Amino acid sequence: NSSLHFIRALSACSFVLSAVGDETIPLTTDEARDVVTEDALIINSSLHFINDLLRNMLDMQRASSNQLKLEPTPTDLFRDVLQPVDTMLYRREKSFEVIVECPTDLHIMSDRLRLKQIILNLGRNAAKFVDHGFIRLRAAVVNNRVHLYVEDSGPGIPIEKRKILFTKFQDSLDSLSQGTGIGLCLCKNLAQLMDGDIWLDESYHSGVEGCPGTRFIINLNTPPMTINDDVLNSAHSIRENSFSHGMSMTINSSDEDPESTSSGEIHGSLPEEMRILFVDDDAVLRKLFARSIKKIRPAWIVKEASNGETALRIVDEEEFGIIFVDQYMASVERQLLGTETVRALRSKGVRSPICGLSANDVERSFREAGANNFMFKPFPCKP
Image (cartoon, rainbow, N blue to C red; front, side, top):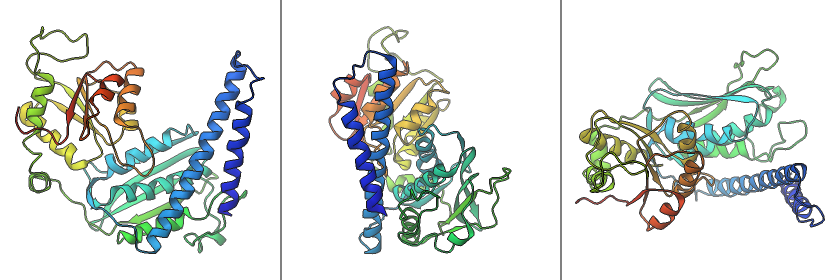
């Protein structure tokens, strides 16, 4: 079944590439350009399917042979898991609403990439079946254990298929057999690898007439954690004192007119109030940054994002005095690099000063993308 879908996806790509490469079709009209755009979307969808299939098969094989190693880190469930998945589902332009519900500052010690992979797989499964209504990504603490929920207003899962839901290479859940039959099995393997479990809530109903829906529950079997000063100091004692010096070098190092901001730079003394957007996939680093900023300017507000796609959505709703963007943000699938995020921000008309961040020397790339400044990570401890 998986081989058949793989061949279908490759065939779609080959067919579309042949059509796009037809030199007898000039791209001089809106209709011709629309056809090419639609063809490009088919290629992207097919390649995305192939990528998901191969990655899931590889991960399932590694998990079953105990070769998949977890990397537990302090994880912000909203910013590191639910919000990025929301962004990925949002990009697909479906007719449903994606709802995210999560307690404020709910952190756990977990492998955030694998956890995001579970939620993303479940969310994309839901997206295949929901015609209207919602997909809800939710987190809650139950008996001092963190539970995650993926709920939708789709048609529900047939009773006869519920007992084999998590088996390897099971029959597809849809009438056209478009699924590969390995996504839910991988979710089960990953959940168990993290000492958790996943199951279908058979008592769930979406509340939407004619749409019973589906709810998957993931019990992570771990209590919430508090990222306090002790955690921050023990995790990143070297970084702790570096942010204030880095800030000084970045925005307080010019002899020009303090009021001059036409080039996107901030000169002179630090303002008393400012909104900052910090884009980085490391939850501890984001907390350290916010804490250090508060030491310099208690009235400053720091907004966090764990990937570029989320940052692009945030700037649609808020304006910021400075935006910091890391270059490499880990994910279960390819996401925007920092330089790509900067370029997209400028394309959207964002004029805020932007500072690129990386452990590699990519200053030129950041500046060519539209950034005003660049800082190396880890940040220098001396001004």
